[in-house]
Length: 127
Image (cartoon, rainbow, N blue to C red; front, side, top):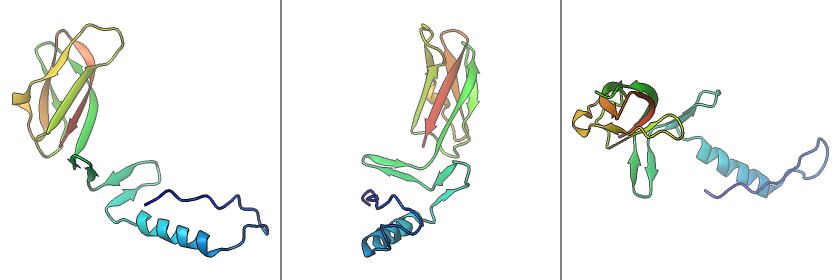
C-alpha cells in the first residue's frame, strides 16, 4: 500500500470539497487498516499476529531487564517456543562487563544470562 497523499487542510465550509480521489484513497486505507490479525487497545499498544520480513517471519518477541550475576541468572521470556535468536547487553555506557546467553539453556519459557561480573542488562528473545 502506498502512503496516503494528503488532501487537506480541511476547513469547515471551505475547499477542498468531497472528491472521488479523496474518498477512494480513504476507502483503500480503511480496507487495509481493517486487518483482523492486527489490533490496538487505544493506548498505543499494537498486537500483530506475525511480522513477515524480507528474510523471515517473527511470530513471538519478548524483551526485558534483569539483574544478572556472574554465575548466571535464569530469565523468563514466556515465548512458548525456543527462541531462534536471543541477545543481551549491559545496561550502561562505558562498562567493560560482557554478558552472554548460554544457548544450551534456551527453552520455551526461560534462558540463562551470565555476566563477566554482576550487572544489570537488557535482553531480547525472538522466535
